[in-house]
Image (tube, rainbow, N blue to C red; front, top):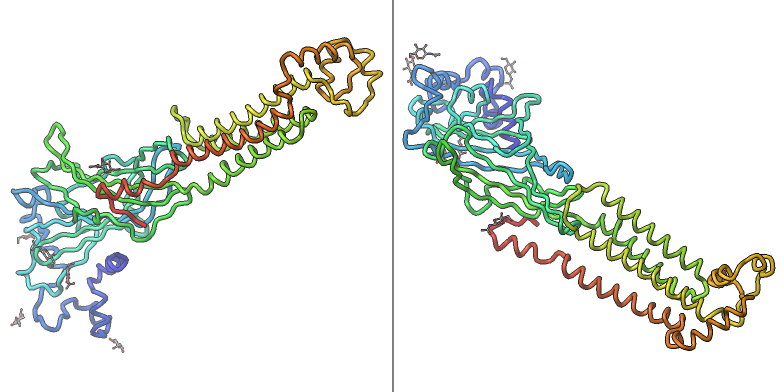
Length: 446
Ligand SMILES: *[C@@H]1O[C@H](CO)[C@@H](O)[C@H](O)[C@H]1NC(C)=O
Ligand SMILES: *[C@@H]1O[C@H](CO)[C@@H](O)[C@H](O)[C@H]1NC(C)=O
Ligand SMILES: *[C@@H]1O[C@H](CO)[C@@H](O)[C@H](O)[C@H]1NC(C)=O
Ligand SMILES: *[C@@H]1O[C@H](CO)[C@@H](O)[C@H](O)[C@H]1NC(C)=O
Ligand SMILES: *[C@@H]1O[C@H](CO)[C@@H](O)[C@H](O)[C@H]1NC(C)=O
Ligand SMILES: *[C@@H]1O[C@H](CO)[C@@H](O)[C@H](O)[C@H]1NC(C)=O
């Protein structure tokens, strides 16, 4: 390919570089006379061939070369994919498009040409019939034109025309974020002749086994890896007839390691930390409250951070499930704390709980405050209430002392979290996507 572009640079001299290398010719001699071929005397120079076959008296570029219809074969090489954007739902790539068709009017075998194939550029292409094909669903498409228009044209002596364009194209993606961030995304382009229906121009991939589109190199984006390419030909009805459409689908797999490091791993740690509270004992209620609330806040912050760079879709994503369930776990550990607090109030302080500045705090405090303060590990001078409560405790609360609830929670929370993890990762884990693709005639790129 690069060789072809290279050739194009030198077309004005009409010197095929290999000839120079092979025969060690003196360049200045060749520039004076193009018809240097050894074997052929009096051969026609390329410039004359071009003038003859494109002479407008005989060649009409508006007329379809064959009355029976033209067949245009298309091949695409992907040079690079520069971005996939979730916000605007599109992707951008640089590609080489090669189109080949046979135009009998451009035969020049009979002119005794000096060279086999003619390598030409877009100035000649402008004089020839072309199928006027384009990407009909692209947002932007442009032929690179720096330092010159990147079009390569090759004429074979039997009239076969091969055109190669280097194009930057921005096409749409069908972003489905339900599996995010373990998702695969498909982006697609549709190539067809804009002017001619399929009785005039038939568009075909050069091969039907999916190799008509291939990457020149392994394609890896920061977020995605290209894992599959699917090509398809379809017939679409339009008011002016049936059109041949060439569909190209690219399948990308998200590289989720970043999300694992930024979302899943911190969530694991936050949840583990929220379990520390179970081992702090029923009396450390302020510390436990702080732990729980902080964990909840940290989670909300992480969630917001990830969500900021995603479009506001109206369905539930895999990461939403993860974050919401994780928040529920922390919320439940706070609820458990509330139950503990309630129980502690019922049971009352342990005999050996430390004495504290009861006098001044307590003297002013009414009955209700006394109860309230006990929850925060204050010793109780309110003997009256205590007695009342312990009596009540005997009726209801004996089976479930706070220590026992903590003990049970420190087993149940990890167990439930483990079950949630197994369910979550079997449902959203990525295993079968590649099998699904290969069944469907998609070429996999590994
Ligand atoms: C090329 O031709 C010039 C004069 O036309 C001559 O001076 C030079 O030596 C030649 N070079 C070779 C490599 O033959
Ligand atoms: C080449 O052309 C010249 C004049 O145009 C002619 O005299 C000569 O015979 C031709 N040579 C061959 C090999 O055709
Ligand atoms: C095309 O061919 C005709 C007849 O052979 C000739 O008179 C005319 O000059 C040619 N036109 C060009 C642009 O070469
Ligand atoms: C012309 O192109 C064909 C097909 O691309 C190739 O097989 C052939 O070798 C080329 N001929 C020359 C003389 O370059
Ligand atoms: C024309 O020649 C090229 C290569 O030289 C070949 O690939 C192609 O099949 C030929 N086309 C026809 C219609 O003979
Ligand atoms: C093959 O896969 C593509 C892309 O995933 C899909 O659009 C198409 O409908 C599938 N075709 C069949 C026959 O399953």
